[in-house]
Image 1: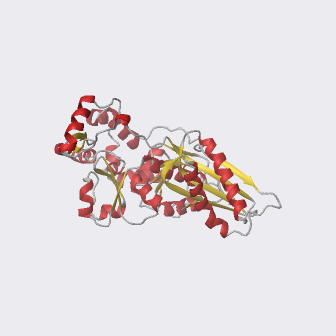
Image 2 (image 1 turned 90 degrees about the vertical axis):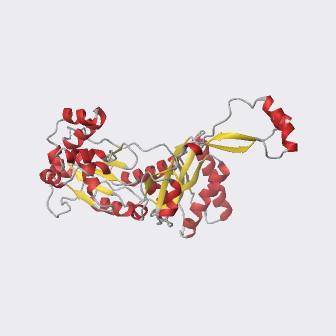
Image 3 (image 1 turned 120 degrees about the vertical axis):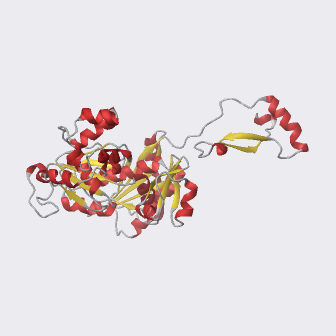
Length: 410
């Protein structure tokens, strides 16, 4: 179960930085970058509420791993079968795009309680401004996020890459030059660029950011290509940026029930009837979409209790959603003396699981041959099945028994 702050508080940053010095106006209204390192592994661990090492695999290879898994010897790009040999405590999970989207929506909601000025590009990295510093530090500790504050987005991203998980690194405008002087170009590897880029910069005699900033965009494009060179130039010589706009929350199916003065929600049948009605109304608003995250808001007249849950799988089945909502609300209702309103939210929409169907039926000749051979030699008829993302050529195909269909199944 995941908790969400009850009410947003929009206040400016406190006028001191991490060194206890007064910050100038540029830093007070500067950019804040929040980064979640190894986001796919972080999303799986948070959704399962586990503290054990986690490795996420895709295509038979490790694409993300938690900090403890990396310390245990797990490496990005390692074959999935080797993870258990390297670290027995590390659990292996297939990459789940809907789970990542649900956890990212949850994170953005947490950030939106700090400030209305929020934007996001890739999952795991968000930019915001004018948030309360104490709340920002508390959120960084809770999410184990790396936070950087700087005059521009790119410098704030570099500061977040240097910050430790759970800490905020503030860079006033007057300290940016010193940060560039003492920061190695190895930080580019943390930003997702190829590992050979920092190595080549060091071999060329540009070991730090300030030295590499003397290269023009033309030089960087000539050496690393147009796309990578433009990206490096944006970090080393940040251009003028537009301000961060207001955040637009993602779509949600929301229904609310307000109790009358003589209604008692502690009565179990009454509570079940109201819950079923709210879930049915929210389910109608899905309009074919699948839901991966549930949010319930319970208000007793004085305070609001908000609870959330990431579902094991995205679903649009009404009975399944109703069971999950009841399991989410019942423990909270038992601890409340009264209830004034109940709100159900279905969030993190997706199209659901897809499955490849067959475009053509099997050839009748194969069916006839298999029907004659199978009674005399059971299991002798085999068919080759393609295995996607196989690591070795000999594993690209596997053989399975040829299933003989009846006449009415053809």
